[in-house]
Amino acid sequence: SAVISQKPSRDICQRGTSLTIQCQVDSQVTMMFWYRQQPGQSLTLIATANQGSEATYESGFVIDKFPISRPNLTFSTLTVSNMSPEDSSIYLCSVGTGRVDYGYTFGSGTRLTVV
Amino acid sequence: QQQVKQSPQSLIVQKGGISIINCAYENTAFDYFPWYQQFPGKGPALLIAIRPDVSEKKEGRFTISFNKSAKQFSLHIMDSQPGDSATYFCAASKGFQKLVFGTGTRLLVSP
Image (cartoon, rainbow over all chains, first blue to last red; front, side, top):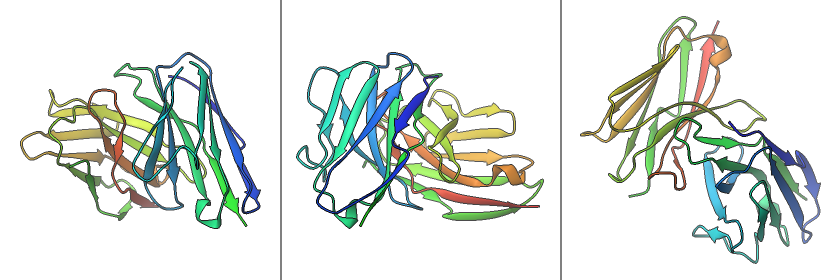
């Protein structure tokens, strides 16, 4: 399965600022997803990052707040913009190769604290 | 219709016992049902997955049981070990579209 490098692993940010999270995969993947996970909670999909086109956002998430880039088949970024304490969470990148036996792989996540 | 309901929320099992976690779904279009294991500070890791054309899949101590008519599936962990203590998530998807996750089960295996 694919190996994901997600950076940064954690950060503490001031409210009103922005943070860009990087997701680098060691192989070309068809699908890339960005999730948010509140501590002790389940995973909520933010958006699907499409290569060469705009990301597809889930209900409750908008491009102005969470702009996503995917310039190629191995890399994507998620920006959390104009942050508030409510954005404090763990942000996870996930990839899929489209093969049943590989399923979806997750990065280790970025633990964001907004103060 | 997109929900996946998971129970119990937490579970304590003695070492050597059987851990059972249940999930139910509504969307009959779902055709891929994975289970993920997550340790603190780590991302979820795929544990085992099943497609609806089989009723059971076993990998080592981990077994998925799938009941298509009841729209339910469960994870059984045989001979549970303290190292199995983690949070477990069931999920479902249609084809290789986005995963819908259950709410999670925090498993504690006591020594």
